[in-house]
Image 1 (cartoon, rainbow, N blue to C red):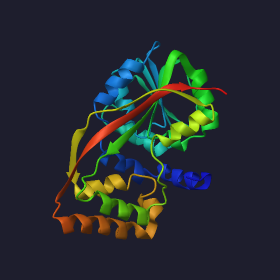
Image 2 (spheres, rainbow, N blue to C red):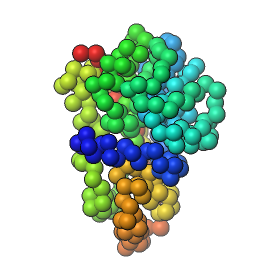
Image 3 (cartoon, rainbow, N blue to C red):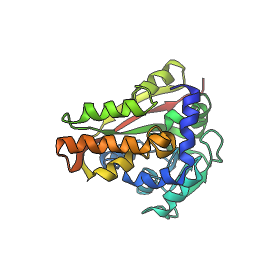
Image 4 (tube, one colour):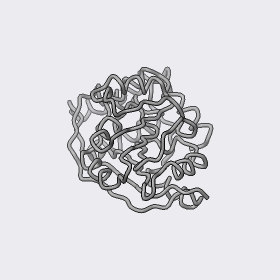
Length: 257
């Protein structure tokens, strides 16, 4: 993704409509948090960078004495406060960029949930390095939606017609970081899957919470996109969308070159 495309898509996160739709996304599978529990070191403070509405943050309180949840979108932060667990006094919600937000290190763990690719790596990786306690690590997370073969390829074809996102995968970013001397990878784990099911309309809402398929991004094409997704499921006799969800976790040490 070019810098120009990344900047254009990132403006979506300021929209309250997108923040509200985050609740329709599939959750992180519980085994993700067991991995994070094994990674955290003293002090038990966590920085959740690019926290969004707190899909990670609001569960990290079970592992930490304090969670600093940083996101540049005030709409995301406000939505996170309203959601279950968002009022926990151990959470310190901070509106700001991971590159410049006020922090209170050291942290025993830094997490990025589907957000590291939006950051300026030349700035944040050295900053994360300095903010970690000895032995502390960065854990980057992703949620993998395993669409059924019966409709996966047809749905992806719709995405490709409407989305400007490229084909890069979650793991590609770490190869780039290692080549640039910004990250030392220590491990990777894909969790077991959990079943996930929702209505077709809620599935469309979840898709519209993404940067490239949001109503803000699609504009006049929003209705056409939703209509194509509905038509696909109608043609297959699908009344509810069901698929397994896995979590991917990469962890290691951010570096200061």
